[in-house]
Every structure is written in structure tokens, then in C-alpha cells.
Length: 114
Length: 407
Image (tube, rainbow over all chains, first blue to last red; front, top):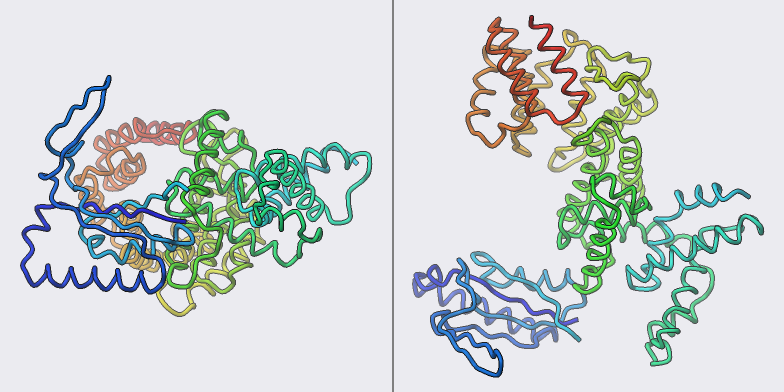
């Protein structure tokens, strides 16, 4: 099965980290990605720019309406995602708990259609 | 053969049959339907044809064949789904030794933390214990229709989210076991003191909880947490016959007729407590609670109890598993060791934290302490607060009596 791991965190917290911490976290992400690739579980992964860069769009009655910002203001914002291959939810949980941001943010695990 | 004999087989085998069908079919909902059809077929055929030699294997085979038919009708087999092809071709005699493991897997699936706690309890009762949807609905004080929907939702989540049908591996086992035991204990306490209404004990739920815990102990032997919980439930359940009068009134421990206690359950419970407490590693909170229950059973009279040891065990429990309920119980033990004047500040501090103010036992304990200190008016006030917070009719009657005794 494929699972999407949606990473939510408070952007303010993340942006106030010092450089050394950021570098360490970046390294941890790199190591996780390498390991997932080695095991054939890596499908894709991206970090997202801050929610202030977001644009929300909807099409109603053929008209496109775009607005500034994310769909909903929340304490934690979507900051990135993984798509991974896992045999079941427990294996996906095992990967999710290794995501560095899980230690201060939240990871939502969603099975992917198909 | 009477249809009631089929029901007896259902009671005994429903959980095992479902567990094996889930393994064979790989789908919770499909297996649930297959089990239902298998028992429907049994009701049709057994009364005339007699009980098959191995009813469980019969039910599993019929259930599997019904499911295969069903899938064939849906044309899933024709499309070359290899899993179901092999399913149809599989040998007709499921291995007897698999049943135990299947049920263990099923318990862990039903109690998976990705399901909400209520769904875990409901699914366990329905799937592992084989209770009817109506019976599960009664336990939750809800309608059968609502419960049926909840169960289907939970089963679909198991399938769609890929919740495994597996006993978790070592690093996860302890944590998951904690969740499983919490569900079992919840089933028991719900049965032991229904949260509201007229009836005090729902024996069926208590029996199912003990049954499940025995099953865990048999399938994963030597675990102190499982033995501790089993001991705790046995020591409570042993007294259920003496806890309530035929009229439905509560009998307090020190007033209970101990000849009504179940001696075998007590003996088994006491033995399990010893084993669980002696096990190496971190002490299980269930074992500590069971040890306290053991002391109560061994010396039911208030004055004969080993209160210092009870107080010390609550101290340990508070350390292992802090909770307001444990704090309150410890305060009661302290009052018996050091006097009510030492215990009252503990209870007052607990009350001042506010998180607990609707819990009637907090007010009961406070009232009892105030009464022992000779502060009648304040005691009366506290009993009234307890009465207002109590939900069960028998508890209300007990409190009214105490209020009347106060004069």
C-alpha cells in the first residue's frame, strides 16, 4: 500500500530555530530519505514554503476565484509530505515516527487510493 | 438437535470462526458476512442433520465457501485476483493450531490505536467475543442501528487504512498490549458498575472481559501485566454475588456475606497476584491494584485490614500511574492509618483542583471523613453534593440512607 504522510508544524517555531539545529534536522531528513530509498519504500517527499506563500483557488459556476493564504488558518500548518510504500499501517507508523518534525509537529497518515 | 444448541456453539466459536475467516479472506467485513451466513446455514442444517464432527471447521469451511461464491458473483474471481483464486483452491481442513493465533491477531487488530477507544471496545465485543450488535449497543446505551453503523465504519477503516491483522512485534508489543488490556478492563468495569441506570452489574460483560484476559494469558503466557489484570478482575468478580442485594441495593465490602464469594475465583486471583508481583522488570499497575484487592478480600472487616500496606501500595500505584481516582483511594487508606484529620486536606486539595468535582465518590469520601471528625453539618452538605453527582439508582439509595443516619 502507499501512504501519504502529511507533516504539520508551527512555522513560527521552525523559523526561530538556530542554524546548527536546522542543519542537524536537515541531515536527519536526508538520512531518512536515503534509508527509505535503500528499502524501496521511498516514492516522493517535498518540503513546502511557508503558508504565507499559499494561494487558494476554487471554481464555482465556471468562475475561478483565487484568494491569498491557505484554506484554513490553524495553529500548525502543512509543511511537507512523504509518499511511502508500506505493507500496512504499522509499517507506515514506523516510518512516520522517524520523521524529525514528528517530535515537535504532527504527522497525519493517509492511505492513498489505488 | 435444538436451535439453542446451535446458539451454544455460536457463543463458544463465533470469535474463533471470525478470526480464521479474516485470515483466510483478508477482509473484515467480508469475513463478518461469511460468519453470519455460516451460522445461518448451521441453523438450517444442524437441527435435522445433527452436529458435525468438528463444528468449528465446518463453520469456517462453509463461511469461506459462501464468501468465495459471493466474490465469484461479483466477478472478482474471473478477473484473475490471485489471492481469491488460491482461496478457492485452498485445502478444506483448516489447521486446528491456527485458531489460537488467529484470535490473538484479531484482538490486536480490534484494539489498534488508529481506531478510537469506543470503536475498539465495540469491535472487540462484537468480533472477538461474538456479542450481538444489539448487546453491544446496550452496553453503550445506544440503538442497534447506530451501533451497526459504527461497527461498519470501524471495519472499513481497518481495511482502507491497512490496519494489520497481526500480533505486533517485540518493540511495539508492550505498548499495544497496554491498549488491549485497557480495552479489556473497560469492558469489565462497564460490566461491574454500569455508568448509569438501574442495574449495578452486567455479568455478561464481566464474563467476556475475564474470558478475553484468560485467552491472552494462554496465548502469550508469563506476562505480568496480563496476569495482574486477570487477578484484579477475578478478585472483583468473585464478590459480585455479595455486592448487591436481591432488591438491587449496594452491600459494602465490610458488610458482605463472604460465604457468597466465589472461592475458586479468589484462589486463582490470589495465586496470579503473587506470580505477577514477583515477575522481573517494571511492576504492572494492574498487579498493584490486584494486590490491593487481595488485601481487601483477605481481611474484609474494616478494622482487620492491613491499612499501612494498602496505603503503601496506593503510593506505588500513584507513582506508576498517577490519577485522581488513585489519589482519592490513597486518601481513604491514609485516613485509616493516620486518622481522618490527616486525610481531609488531601481530599480538599483534590477537590480544589476542580477536574474531579462531578465525581460523586470524591464527595462521598469527604463526607465520610467529615462525619468521622464530628463535623455533621459539613458532612451533610457533602453527602448532598454526592447525591447530586451520583448516576446509579442503587448508589443514590445508599447515599440517602447515610444522609438519614446522620440525623
